[in-house]
Length: 298
Image 1 (tube, one colour):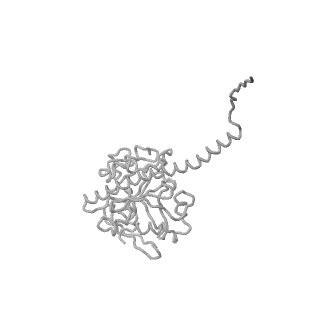
Image 2 (cartoon, helix red, strand yellow):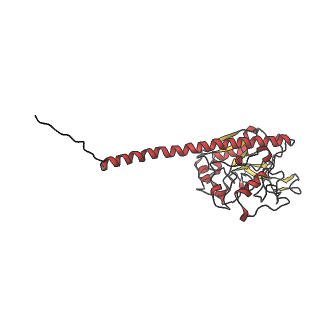
Image 3 (tube, rainbow, N blue to C red):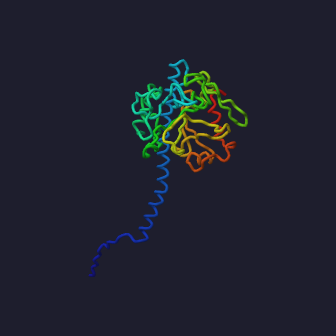
């Protein structure tokens, strides 16, 4: 009787099999990595929306406690466009410093601490109580080496008791004596600065807080506020930050916050730093949307 002895043959992967496995892994990575990136951007925008919501509520609460007076929307404390009752201050050596009487930190002294001191010294901080509200988790500029490590991600618009005017009558606590005029939607428009919330028309449509990436403009601190209509024309002067793919968050005068998805490719290029100016601002629907929400007294 014949008997057969069979032994299992051990073998590894062939070259073809290894290449197939590598190709499958590469395909899966190509699918998963963008999905994870988008999920991370959405998660950061959710936190950012919460930040903006809380900043808006603090902004409204300040006005409620001060006879409808809007907190100063700029951190300029000197010059022709100086701002009273500033919501934040420039970087300070101590959070008890007042830049009207004490010099702020010099550029060589900029640090995370001096930047946060400026936030804590602002008039809005007693209503927020948390410096983290002033920073979007999608904003990575704070990881840059100093003096470029900008921390604050948000700015207040120039017409919300901010910097968008020409001059005051006599000092920062006096009324504004001269406003700017800009060509808005083809019509000359006097850019009136709202000083009280009672002066704001349709507050649910007028934004106050905007994400702004000043590092793309080679600035080392978020100074002033968010301003449109540079040189009196219907164009971008400042533009929103690019922290959430093709969208940004904004906070509004009625206390709500929302995420705005940008439609024009030139808007996205501008925010990314791919171009320095919009080649066709008159036909940019994003700029048109921002222009309508920028004017508080329309």
